[in-house]
Image (cartoon, rainbow, N blue to C red; front, side, top):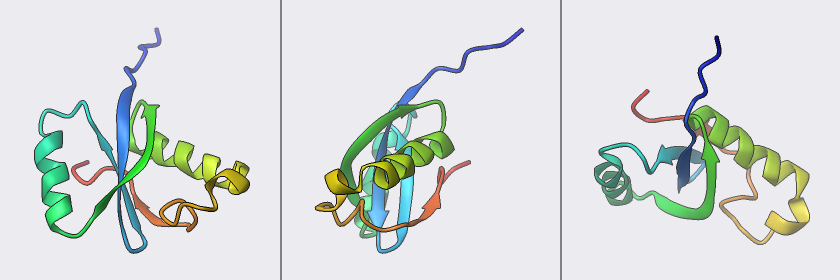
Length: 89
C-alpha cells in the first residue's frame, strides 16, 4: 500500500553558486534560516511545495529551464547552481 507523503513549503537559500532548499515545516527552520543568513546566504523570493528538498530543487530547476523568459531577470534563478537538497539530511 502506498503512503502519501505530505508536501511542505520550501524556500531557497542562495550564496554564490550554492542553492539550498529549506522546508518551512521543519521545527528548527527559523534557526537554520537565521544561521544561513549570518553565513552570507540570501533568501530567494521563489517558493515551492514539495515532498522533500530534492524535489523542491527539481521543481525550481524545471521552472528555470522551461521559462527562461520569465526568470532571466532574477540573478538567483539564472544560473545552474550546485544544489544541496537539505543541509541536515
